[in-house]
Length: 248
Image (cartoon, rainbow, N blue to C red):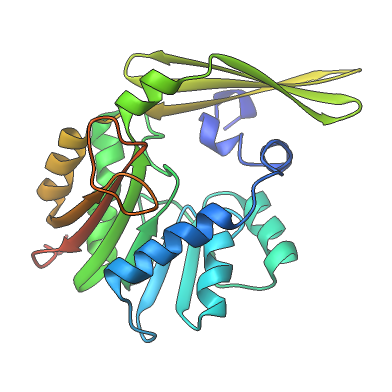
């Protein structure tokens, strides 16, 4: 497959992505992990998988606390960068639609979902997660709240990444998706990438999770663990495997 025909998520998570988000620190990661620990109360013997782990910020924090944690991501560039930044961790190069191994807890942070074109393909991720969880395994799913996105969308902003490189981000909502165009402009060239994430309502996600076999224990509004409302910043599901997986 040529680069032109590759889906956006196979082109975007590279060195330019890291440059755009170089200001990120571990504060949000730590806050969300603290909510996970408080809510799920994992055992040190649990096998924990961070789905769409990127560089492994969450892995690093969990590992320092003595947990047995693994991270799966599709991007070789992000995994390699994570190894340089945080040291060797249990990284797995793979696709969230086909998760290898079995885990007691699977975590999905910061909207690593909704990338695919069809709802059927997006929801197949829940089936993949269900099959990869042990009996009564737990799934933590952090996603966007469409209403919050609509009400707080910044149509355009600009970042100076260096004296000779500028990033321009343009956002719009179209066909139930939030689409971002990212242009990196330097003296000699312009490189352009896209993000396209399906905006699912809470009720749509609830129905799909139930269909895949999950019971939903809590729905949080943010990383502080507040109760969800229509105007919440996030939609965070605390789920548990509620029936045995049907082997295929």
